[in-house]
Length: 169
Image (tube, rainbow, N blue to C red; front, side):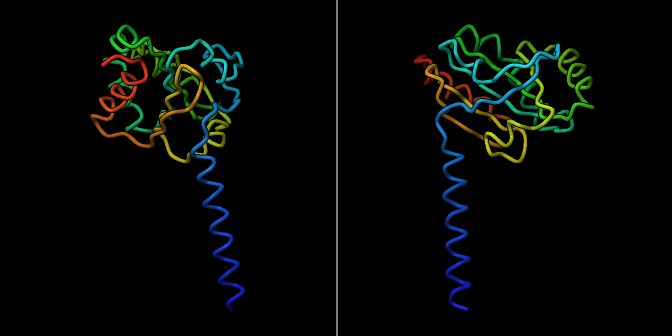
């Protein structure tokens, strides 16, 4: 009985350590996504320009995702001008819904880049389960912030993180 308990504790500890290591990663993983035109690109390449980059992972069926992207859309041009930030929305919808992703992004008039991840490779690489999921990458290409979920007002916290990284208050 004692061996089973010790074995279970050891297993839980190793899973916990692995999960923490995945969550606390600093470097951007190398993951392929698709442009709206079907071209493949590594998301790591999207952070090579020396500016703060925000990735928002979302899905067409996710109401909080659409709320978050709508809220960011309203302020994105200001953020871009004030903080020189790049905002990238990556849909985790499967390939059957790629037309829906294009339709939604066009109808909403989102001013930021939208990419497709039909195989959910980003979910595995960043070790998240639910969308919306936000990752901020600093000018050096290091992950400095990760957040899961959205409630109205979260975009203000996001802006304060971006401002701090951009050295603008």
